[in-house]
Amino acid sequence: MAAGEGTEVAATAHHWSGREARLLRHALRLSVRAYAAYLGVAARTVAKWESGGTATIPRPDTQAILDTALARADDNARRRFDLLLRQANGEQPAAPHGGYDFEAWADDLDRTMVSLGRQEFPLARTLIDRWLRQYQPNSNDTRGMDLYGRTLRMLGEVLQDQGVIQGPLSAQQSYRRALRVFSELGMPRRVAQLELKLVVLDEMSGRLDSAARQYESLTADERLSEHDRTKARLWVGTALSKKGLNGQAVNHIVPAIRGFEKLEEPSDWSIAHQKLALAHRGDNNLTAATEAIEIALAHKVSDTPLQRVRLNTAYAHILLSDQANTDAGIRLLDQCAHVSRQFGLRHQLTSIDGIRLAFERQA
Image (cartoon, rainbow, N blue to C red; front, side, top):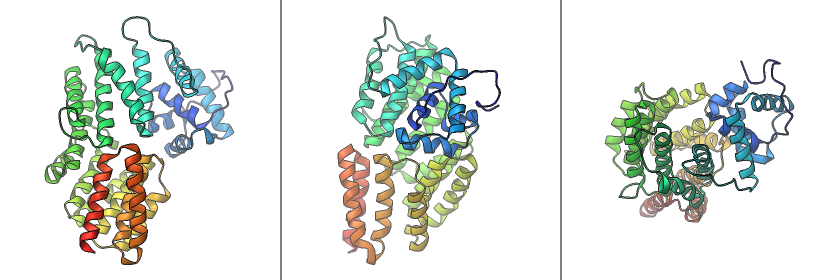
């Protein structure tokens, strides 16, 4: 039953914005897809709220559904929602009194996720380091160890987005530490998700043969959700495209696009079209490449700096492949480089420099 169905709960009216709808999802600890199912709306509707922030106002009938969802939430979820709402409005929560405040820790992880989405890396590191400094790992403390593993994974994601891939203080090290924690806790899905993250780092480091083989194996790994297996299928295509095997890449990317459409994952569906565009560009099919990148640009769900740079870098790469559009491609590449420097996106800068160098050599 959707949250808005039934009359047993009397909801208190609340004027919901897209931002508040997102905070309620975080308070309920639900994914976009699970939240949409809980409310009885489409996943793309939830994604639209969240990308619009305070400027997006859910429809009147949805306002009532959100009211009911909040009214039916348990006390912990309501406290989390209130805390997240106060933090979003600039208020600071009271400091915890002794021991580990696991609720505050979980809320900080939610805030970290939001900060990471906006590429606010200093804030994300502050929230992460606050808990990694004070928590002493204890195998008998299941709740604390779960939060510890999630925090290590989040640190890995921050470092990955910054391009710190390998080394003693890298994304690779953080993911491996998190993997050990979840292996000890006996949580196979999270272990498999981290194995997938480590393969992404292999691909980013240029180990494309190994990455393609590991991705292929993970597409059939029952420990992963169907969504994660579809991501692995897309990334097989990404690795093959980087190797220059663009025809084979398309044969993996197109089924992934169909999979994301079936799963109602609009963000991944858009990203997959970006990957398809680059595969077509590598195959010198500029008409198909332009069509795919235009779909990705028209249907992007979020406009974070990182996603904007990724999309526009791909578009610039395609423009540079057409002699009539090289000036526009260079201008767009310069804009991407500026945003990458502004937000500390080092891996993206490396990719941009590589595209520019290849173009100059060809010219």
